Length: 336
Image (cartoon, rainbow, N blue to C red; front, side, top):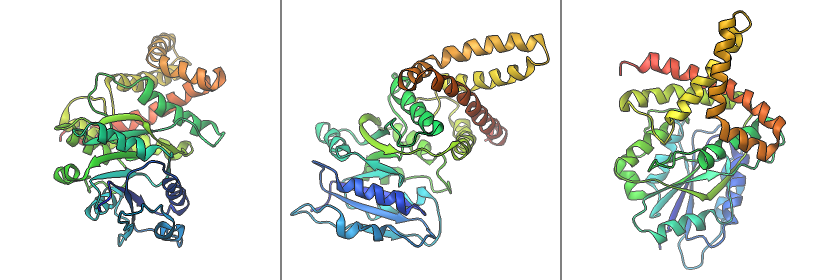
């Protein structure tokens, strides 16, 4: 019997996190039948997921065939290629994409399957990572709250589709293949998930399911800031084609928040030299506070006023990275 889910995990030099992910999948409760397909994307480290026991320790479902797989690409080709190759050998009716650095909750697969069972017309679902972090460091906790607030408190509720985020997302295999899969021109985790979202959304709604959860431990400041810059840079190429904002990657409010954050930084520096700078600072600061009020209140509730103040200034810094990436991208892609 074919599995209900094929769980596709791209893997590149991340044996430790992949091992934790596999362990969390093993602990799934009331899940439908599934297979796990790991795609080794040109790893160079000596420890591979097979040594984590994928074939010998994964849960076995009596009476249902299991044929977990490990595929190996000849070189590092990027997660878009890795996921597509995984789908090519998948046997499940629905594929589930999971980043190698997340962990499932015991009810993740059961909650996901319930959505498909209750509404046969659903073809794509995206979940969310939780806001709790094991680390006590400021930035990982800030980033976790930032993402949670964006998707839960601040999301565009009028939008009919949401980012098909590979942290945890699922789609009917036949639909994925008909759409052509992920765009393999992206050599790294950039905006391939956003680009696929746009293609899915032309014909189908993507269901956002906050109860389909995974745990993710966020990185420190510099890796995340670099990702913000690169995603903003490459997103402008998509924007140049579509000529509009959306509830997927960048709403109009999010764009205004970024611009107002950069304005606050600019006028803060100008205020040291000019009274006009102080006037501009006051205006941009009030506007930025208005746009970020929900997130600031959320940080106060979760972590207290001191954390919220630090978070406010961290948001200004990240706004500069996003703005710089978008500005460079517009200069590069504006004629497309």
